[in-house]
Image (cartoon, rainbow, N blue to C red; front, side, top):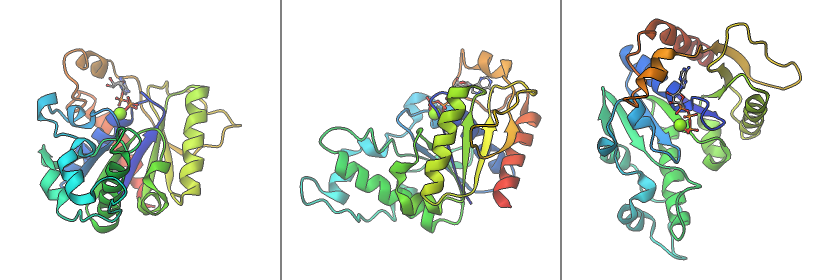
Length: 247
Ligand SMILES: Nc1ncnc2c1ncn2[C@@H]1O[C@H](COP(=O)(O)OP(=O)(O)OP(=O)(O)O)[C@@H](O)[C@H]1O
Ligand SMILES: [Mg+2]
């Protein structure tokens, strides 16, 4: 099953993606963690130090040139089958692929970098039968229709704010238009009694995540979001998300 995590900036996408991967991994699943965001944050959230995080694929100019070419003669259908194994970094038994963002692919090599990212994401999403958690930047449109619609589900993360929920609503609508129908809403850093506004169309709310003092404290000295004392609360949230995705 492949799950993408999206939402407004800073709402907790990477944290929730890392929790989901860790939860599944501890349940004995083989999990691919895909960092498809600008900031290289999924690796550190899983406990890697910055120098252990692999170079994002978008920045691997040599590989892009070799597979896609450059200028007007780029190959939009590059050979990528060997790349997941070649580029993956093992983290706690999970496999991490750091792609980087398509939009942030950089001047001059944007097209070629886009071509390889899209091809690799599409290959992983369409061909792999393993669990995959994709940490996205806010939008989902850059994945392309075919790729997005092949993801099994989208976790839309929001904070309990009108602006955040409006953005969550837009992401959900866009994803739906692209064919990604299975969506859930996770409210992060929220009080349990927060009520959703009735006038904003949103995916089904499946979990509320409280503000975790332990995580805020941890972030002062480490970017790892795992092994928190509230592991039972976090596992329960992950369980609810996965259960809904499986319906
Ligand atoms: N429930 C929570 N309680 C306390 N801190 C949290 C909680 N959720 C996330 N955080 C912290 O908030 C910060 C932002 O979270 P995170 O990086 O997961 O957000 P993001 O949506 O991935 O951000 P970006 O848009 O920059 O990728 C991190 O420092 C994270 O540890
Ligand atoms: Mg993030």
